[in-house]
Amino acid sequence: MGGCLQIKNDTDKTFSLVHTHSYQMNAWGPFPATIAPQSAPSTYYEYQEWGVNVADDGGDVEYAIDGTSGTDGALDSFHITYSLKNDGPYVVFPNWTTSAGSKMTIDNNLNAGTCATWGNPTFTLGIGGTYPNFQLAGVKPFDPNSS
Image (cartoon, rainbow, N blue to C red; front, side, top):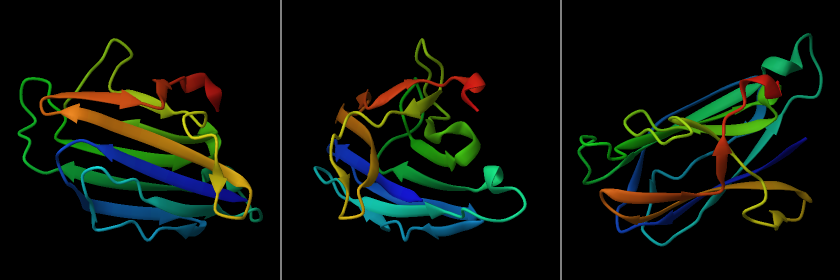
């Protein structure tokens, strides 16, 4: 079982891949080295459906936002983690906090489409606006009790 993770860059900045890693995933990536402004690439992921503990399947990817400093509450990077035990992906903004906190769940209702022809869900994280006033779409407060 799998799906797609879409990162929608509606900013004037380029996102550059910093790190990616997965554990017990059949597919996680490859993620693009850069995500250009006004683009929205999708990456397929698939977790294992067998094994001793499939609940700990997961992957993470981190992007830096080029041309930002990370000061005064500005987003300078974001880290997306897919965790099967948390029912899907969530995102952490290490240098930016909202009233909902710096960790948010990526909702699957921003993009009503499905992943390619597989019919699997597409989770879309939207980042828009201009630096330092970025705006988010497709997220909701992280619920630690969702696992």
